[in-house]
Image (cartoon, rainbow, N blue to C red):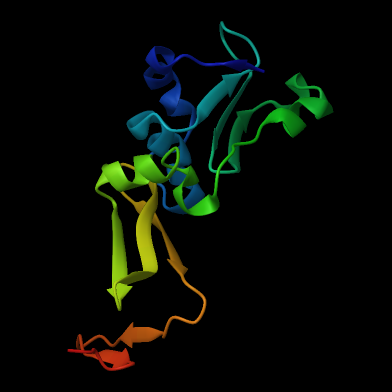
Length: 148
């Protein structure tokens, strides 16, 4: 597989369904944010396209056009929470992350994991030992009372 240059990606986005939730937003996320990679089996008229980001691979086309060992090379690096943004600095600069603090420390983080044109796939991580809280439809918070 060969890398697809960023300027070539818009012409190939039609290979992937637009406006899809979940992993379907992966191709749009990589196109929009520039985080992740696009791959093709050949530069002209590809038979197979793959998009990789944050350890996920989305592939379209004829899998028979690839040798089986090629798939082992399609992976992304980084910690799962911020990998889809290229690392902690990318996530912090994205404007798509929120943190909950208690006693001056981050207790949980929620962020857009994949940013699609119609949906955002979200990720949430909670520090071990942090109290759980939920919000009911009426908007009242449950769990440990707020301090202060």
